[in-house]
Image (cartoon, rainbow, N blue to C red; front, side, top):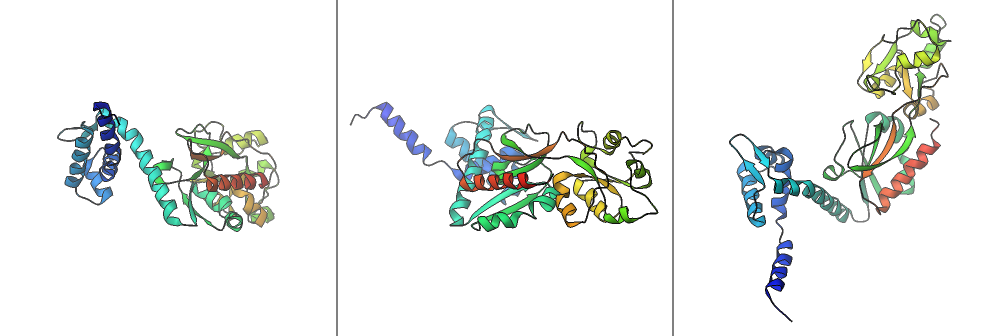
Length: 317
């Protein structure tokens, strides 16, 4: 076998790749994300000195500076930024692989979505998925914030918005038409009529923040206009932080809310809500199925997404 300088260099390269300092890389990822050794230390439950030591170890290993250090702050160098752009994703994928290996025959699947969709649409249906895939344990985490799928270990997301999400793959799941909903008791109260859209002047209008200042997202002024309800003040009534809270107030009989079709489907079916009027507002927002960009071939995630599409197709909204 020929042995020369090139062969020797290749051998050193292979050896070096197999001895990558994973602990130092994890420390670097945290420090790069926070741009702070102290905040990285708090996250990792170590001292700032230990973080500094690991960063120096990685810089020695790579023979390059990863941070520009000053008295009050640290900044990534060009080389550090390039490494930070990829190491977070790689470590996230490693964590997912380890979780799967540790789970044995069962599989944990992490889903992120908004609270209202989790409570009103997803939770009432999950038993059907468990019936066909009892080996999959679904963890539902709620929140309106966009998440980092790799770093936070999410497999699937369902988002309410206009689409166009960056750094993920996404596809339409359900439309989100809107229409008035209220408790049956409001319709049964003959002393305060609710037979025509104009009768809304006698009732409390329930609002949610998601409709404010977002073109194409249904709001009371938009619905009243298409319904031809003149003389009704669209600004009256309390404003809630979420669609979920506005619809819960409607169930409690506190007024009339604009229900988003998938989110009120179960309450309409159970008789907790009714539709006093027929006009429907189209919505520039819809529900989107979101996954990690470029991630294909995961049979469990594929099966869950196919099940979500089946459930969405069976919805009445």
